[in-house]
Length: 254
Image 1 (cartoon, rainbow, N blue to C red):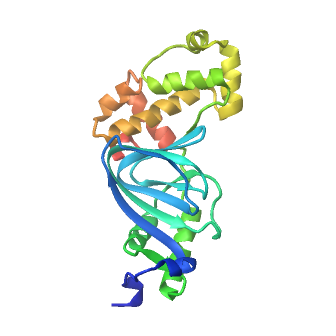
Image 2 (cartoon, one colour; image 1 turned 180 degrees about the horizontal axis):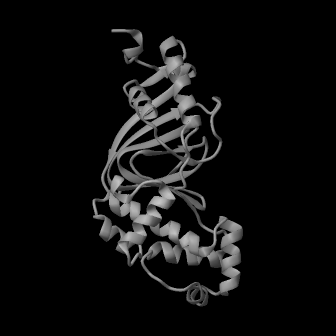
Image 3 (cartoon, one colour; image 1 turned 30 degrees about the horizontal axis):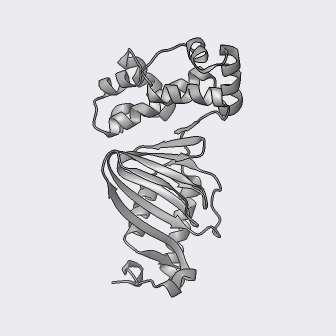
């Protein structure tokens, strides 16, 4: 067996030589990982199930086939949807890599690279094969397509209250006027706040929230029709069209 395929025993003294660490874990549906941070950059990938990663005012939905990149020092928490088989890679903060959270599509090559690295406790810079593997891995991460699976919450307390109201009941169809009356702000004020603080109109923001919510329902095994109703769509065909337009695939492909 070649040295590249062996799993060398790595001690604390070898820490400076580690290029990439790896971790494979399983979680039950509904499990919540408390807020925490890592000194290393992290790539989170779910082989099965889906995850929602929360960091500050932002959240990212990660269905199967997607991964989220978390920068070093970023405080985040995770919620599991369905039975989640998580595969995590940790990259030193000293290595060149993206500096912000983002969701990427895991290409077939990137998937195999992640699984190959998972077979090792870590990649060691003293092993030439490990160095080459890490270089290809970072190249694939850098060129992987980024997907729109993030959802910011406005910073303004009134707009944030409206956002959390929608997130708590995505199927509700309250107008922005009614939501504003409930949370102490006018419709025009809320529309301005959503555009300024999320980059989206309230209507687009709510559609994104509904679609992301539906991913969690699909990950828990609900049929497409039920997922669309849970997300507030009266028409399954309209839901499928919106889903494909936003994520580039139909909900049945998840």
